[in-house]
Length: 356
Image (cartoon, rainbow, N blue to C red; front, side, top):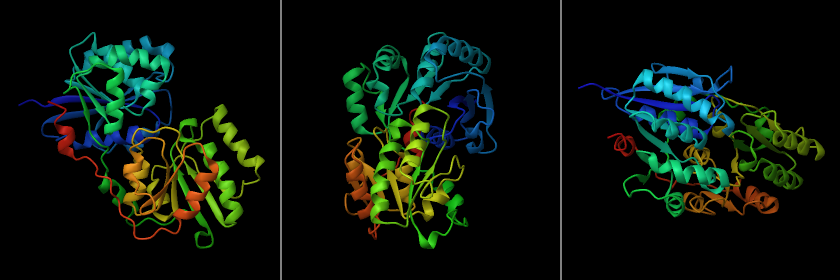
């Protein structure tokens, strides 16, 4: 029996959605599937490539997926690739690429599987219009959690078996391998209290809220330090965050580490992991920090987080957009002991059933 070919499309930068896509691809049995990755973008360094395991074929497609004005140009490029590769399935996890693949699927016989990245897919006005039109064309639509599926069904007409909820998996082997013999990346860690955030610096992630909250934490705990591990891009929001740190005189206590292909070493040795997000899908970094046994603080930006974090036991919950509440939660969280992860990740079998 011939293998089913699956093309997994990724942007060239690295983030939670990209990591989940790679993990899902690894779930597919190599005896039954021919898995290939398609990296889209103009980033010369292509950090996502470093996270794709050896042995997989990687195809490169020069494109600008962030600009909707380039939508039709990107569709034409994807179409040429699909006609050449002749896959049985195409898969993506980010709204911008989802739309490109769905439009492309109109002109070729291929089953398009898309994964929703967060609630914003359906809350921005332009995206809502495009999604209402294009998402019903998908072979399968994967929601990360039940609340997201419920909201989505209010906006988009789709068949019962077309939209399914599958919780994000955890690549436990990858995390274990990257933390087994690793040394702490923190300097003078015995003398400081280490708060950590891992993700790209963006407005939706609430980094400015965390900076304002940390100022209050630092006033109470002078040896507290805050670490941002993630890409700091050249844009107005990142500039605002840098200036905010300078204005508060916290340059020696707030550290922008940049991208690290092993963020788990930072998680393993931190004293508290903080998720200050304004909006999320299902935050992988929160799950990973909990898996590594770290106390966590998270904003109640989506209802599902309240089910992931047992407030006062394995973490502390905080109101969204409230620096004072977040600061209070951070101070409380460092005293948590003997916490357990209550989140139940998906398995390989959960994802295998969507490719049939």
